[in-house]
Amino acid sequence: MTAGPLAGSRVLIGRARGQEDALAMRLRALGAEVVHEPLLRIEPGDASGLRRAVDALAAGDYTVLAVTSPNGVDALAAACQQAGHDVDVLRSPRLVAAVGPGTAASLEATAGFAPDVIPDVATTAALGAAVPAGTGRALLPRADIANPVLSARLREKGYDPDEVTAYRTRAPEALSAETSDSLRAGAIDFVVLASSSTARHFASLAPDGWQAQVVSIGPVTTATCREHGFEVAAEASPHDLDGLVAAVVAAAT
Image 1: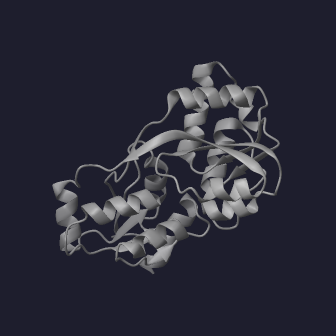
Image 2 (image 1 turned 30 degrees about the vertical axis):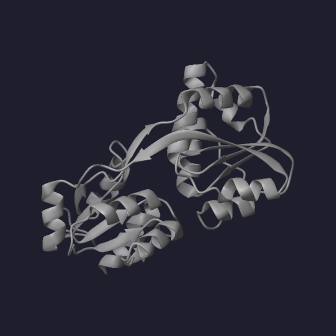
């Protein structure tokens, strides 16, 4: 095993299948053994609503685009491709806002530009507070279970929010028997939770008597953990993959 601050540690990451590689590589480079147990399934959203939204983006009908996850960015980019629009249409609104550094990085990697607004704290409430007052339509491509606070904040600031279900989130039916046994036996040192949804799903699926330290990507996920009765050993800052890795290292030392 590679020497490093996480040498000898087993780290469970609960990201959706296909989204675990970047985090797993960083953790392995520091010596960790990574256990991938998807705690979230990403399913397609409202295809017709997304098509309508990207057509409206191409027509310049939105003043604001507010993205709240890399999954939302991916869904918009796929809709652009399917509708025959260049992904550059995502920069057409007067103001583009991203909830945090991870979403901002996804936007830059996918569409080639950085957002105009990133709040200091990666929450939708903070995002709504960070967007300046204005008028016009605001596009919010979001998960089916998204908190309504962002739409409410933007409406208070003078915008007409247009929420589109960009993707849907689902919980797996169960953890693998091997992962459940490892958690119960204390054979997993850290559980890394990168969203509030994964925290909820972990709470419902983890076996009784599980043992591990929990690392959270940010304050909303941490609050969800506490709502379900378990504490967080470390919280990422900044609220992105690099911050998650640093938080695991902090919890381990």
